[in-house]
Length: 328
View 1 (tube, rainbow, N blue to C red):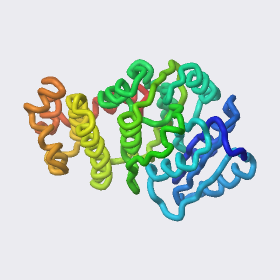
View 2 (tube, one colour):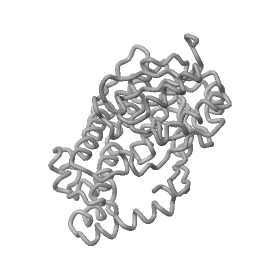
View 3 (cartoon, rainbow, N blue to C red):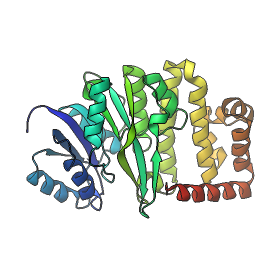
């Protein structure tokens, strides 16, 4: 294995033996071959370790780092980028996969633009074979502020599907939380955008297939533990941006309010969300919601909070729409 390669693909691994082979095959079969695949086994209890060992034995580009204990997705990604040897890094979750030319096309665009982060579009793929494209190139501009504003206005904050210059991680310590597996992308991406002010390039092609796995963290019922983990991340990001970018306060308040509305629509009691933090309670007051996200959205959240039949109907309608869009 050479000391340097062009792209390090970082793959955290935990309980994914059903999908891991598809993921690794899609990476190793890329039309661009000057890569390493840094697989971080986060103490997975299934057969993933054996699968990783087999791939590493067959292809010298595969490196396996095994943890002694489970530390969560955020820490696994951190282990990946701290051990990366590429000029660029590319995050890939182990139940997802790549189009054949994704890395070559992203690298071509990165070289041409000299961008620190080159962002491709994502395609959501369900187990029923439905597809829905997330057109990030239409929402993000050429600088960090445009990307930050986009993710504060509901553009996907996924790290996956982007080519990121590895030097953004050199000599810099980003806040990372043990066993943080909700909105961990948002935490790292927000820091990258605010602290490093990277240059951006977007491309109008699909660089990543995001598999909508019914067993994944983002598609399970909202437990108290999951709710606490989610709002730990959301409130951390809100506070981080509020202190460093007060000029984006309205966008910042808006993203947190919409997230709370989403959970209330799904059935989480508004009082439960308000009790998590004083910031939540302030932003969920009707006058503040009206000023932050507009009267229509404020009315919707208020009705979901106070009229149970309305909340149930909205939840069912959203689910039906997402199925039609191929997002579930």
